[in-house]
Image (cartoon, rainbow over the protein chains, first blue to last red):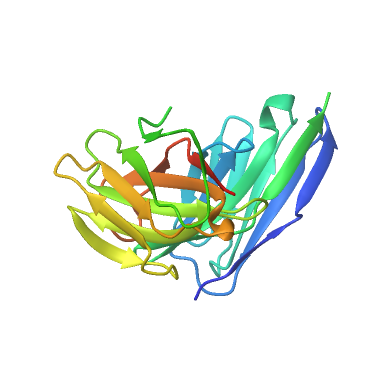
Length: 109
Length: 114
């Protein structure tokens, strides 16, 4: 089965700083999803990547999928308190989705 | 907001009881997936329903069962509740089954088993 490992587990940054979250898969990724979750709430879809080398951006968040399709990164530029939450990567696994354990981001004002 | 709704938002049950959680999918979506998320972990896939049929199941015992209705809303039933069933239960809807279909999640139902 496909395993996803996220790093770091938690991250505390000062407002305005850049940060990167990584997601590494034990198998080739055929669909990689990034979600954001506020504590105890549902997941908010951010981006989906499918092609090796693909990069997508939305506002100050950029996600990349490496050429080998086994690693993805999520980069936030000039972080704001509104970026705080848990970031989860998920991978297509036939009919279900496998998730990493999440990265908890705290942004200090 | 995704348009996916879940009820109830919170629930407290005791060991051995049964519970039913409900999910209304986003308009136009015919696929519903259910996930269990324990504290500090990522969601774990329970099962998926596509056009009223179970379309994949994760590593959960048979006391976890589900239904999908003609309007594509869904129920998750858990019998003989155990303490370890305490978790956030999430449903997600998508416009089709299989890879490449983005899943949109509801706000979740938090279940506490005492």
